[in-house]
Image 1 (tube, one colour):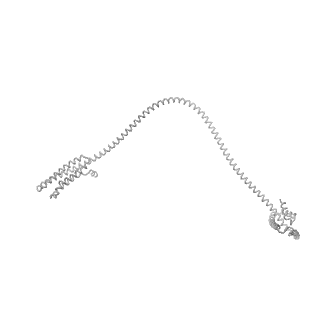
Image 2: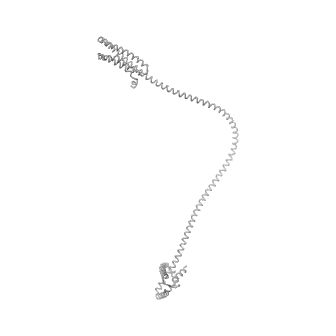
Image 3: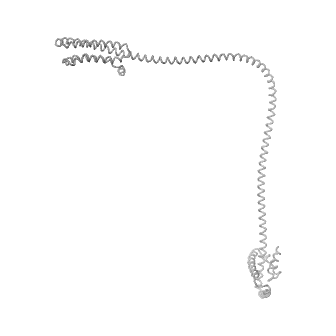
Length: 388
């Protein structure tokens, strides 16, 4: 690779230098240290840029090759170099730098390609490693799942073995129970035959009892009807009894009121009899006075007649009081007492008011009128006394 690069550089600089000169420079450059190589690499890059610019100028030149005096210039340059060794050394260093830069560029490009290839390989390897990791993860998970399944299957196998053992033991127990059941079946068949006979007997008894039950139901229905009728009559009797009790209570209350009223009237009669006795004494005194006055006036006879009438009315009032004792509703006596007052006013008081002796007689008759008024006071209704 290095030789190819060298020959390519020699073709570029063949117009000015010879091939053996470039080989000597190249060998010298590779024998130097690393720091010098780096400096040479920089100078070599600069020279390459300059040479490329000169080549472009020559390529774009409008004149033809035949007309350009390149041969003469080259000869002149060689003579100048031979005459001036310093320029010759400078040109050597420049050429060596150019060669070195070209070689380094070529190697750098190759290394860059290799690096790119290596990066691509690394990427491929990374992708393959990721795929392999994913596959390993998947395989690991599958292995774990399979292990879990294997464990579950092992547990199921153990459980199935346990269940098989249980089934075997249960089968043995069932076989023994079947044997026992066969013996029990024989016993039950014998018991069933006995029970069937008893059942037939009981059916006959049940038919008889059903007939008795039907008759009992009929009697029960009849008794229920009678009971309902009796309950109705009992309710009616209870209602009548309640009404009678209410009437008795009312009668008792009326009797109590009647006794209270009778006692009250009896007391009032006793008081009035005493007052009447006192009034009789007053009347007798008045009669004596009236007899004395009668001699002077003839009008006293009228007073006597009125007194007689008053005594008659008093007797009538006594009779009415005796009748009120026997009756419960004594309030009706109020109307009769009012009638007696009206009679007295019409027959006795009215004719006396027109006479001249009314003023004198008024004093003597005031006591009599007060007694009559007091006598007529008990004719008030019972409700007022009860309220008091």
